[in-house]
Length: 369
Length: 203
Image (cartoon, rainbow over all chains, first blue to last red; front, side, top):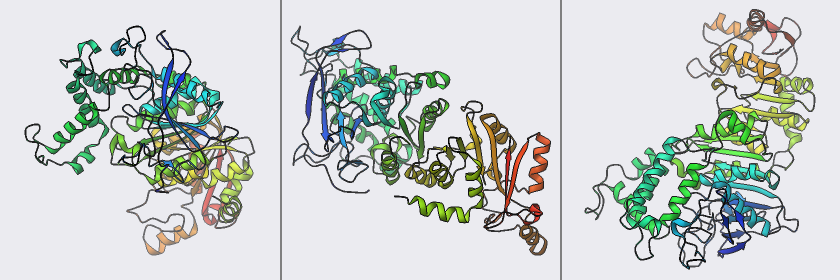
């Protein structure tokens, strides 16, 4: 990788924005969005890049919140001085999604009427709504036009939606390991996750209290999800058929105890209702296929970089090609590369010199070419 | 950063076919380069104000194209170009690609659907050196334009100038222009014997 430098200590922030009419007709008032920024906004406000996170991510994409934090933000490999998203050149905004549980408006927000969290009475939020909230955030900086919107997986869907919701508001769009709509298989995995939550004795129709949350159900949902983020190769390499060390009551195999650990650590940082809201937003996102997709993408006029990963079986390269072909069919400017990786869907998060090279090359290209 | 002047002068001196193509295509045209490699030709075309895009299957070459700012699609042209509308491009270029494709006839037909004209460049198997190697060595020829041994070549087809002319006649393709090259210059006399590289422009 180009640089080991970090953006250093960063401060999580929250923007309280105006009303937002959601896709389902409800109005979010006010709209709260958690975000972080890295780098400096240029006087002309023309160097801003919006980073969109994946399903269980948040606004903490780079740097550290404190000296004691052990792990940096989720995309620290790619955001920082001299990195692909070079904070010496660009002003990076990483925004949390509405419907989530990391500080933005979502099921954990307090309903002013009841004085309690909305829980499952929070309105349905779509990918388009998430993007609309990000647009309010971007406008709050006085930014008319983003240099780029970038994201992987669900973040890629947001980036794609940006290109058609606000075609004049972005120059470039980076879509990694993503899709224009979920396949039945992807919906199936999410459905099993949701059913695990719904079947938890603490579920209480989503109106659970702080001291009795559907932990087991959410942990199971995460375990299910986590399997789909890895590859067969990665799991063989990491676990083989090894029995676990000191966890015999829970699981017979190392992969099992790993998943249990992943599930249990997830419930401490994520909310079951948000998991349902956000996976439903993913499943409902649909720009169609073939000519329908071409039509859906027709308003876009930014430049696109689409990247897929050979070992990603959750969002396989064929789904990226579907996006690319639809863009090419309507004469959009698009770069497409399928990177050879062994890491499965998580590849886009991991260090990869080629990924860095293509992002850097893409961003460097003069805007009008 | 890529120094465009260095790239242009060295590449063009070594690649008379590139020079010929650059001369043929006028600024403002839309070009699709199938098997565009590391994007050198597309980069030169771009300098001339020609809007190009490429398809390439080699990952390193793709990364190189993106670094050059050359629009490129990572994929296999054998898998089809069906998403492109009729006559979307002014030119499709197949520069030393056609001999590596599984179904050249189908691909050329598809190229003629999506482009007004198709430029095909291929190593001439009728070149005297190739003939002499077969005749005197009795072995599959290895030359600078056909640099592979029989067991590691990506080339699925071997064709000469006469073969391609015959193919165009059979398929009813109109040959609009032809040019032939040795290392650094054009060949006019008896090209099937003296040309290393052949260029056909058809529609």
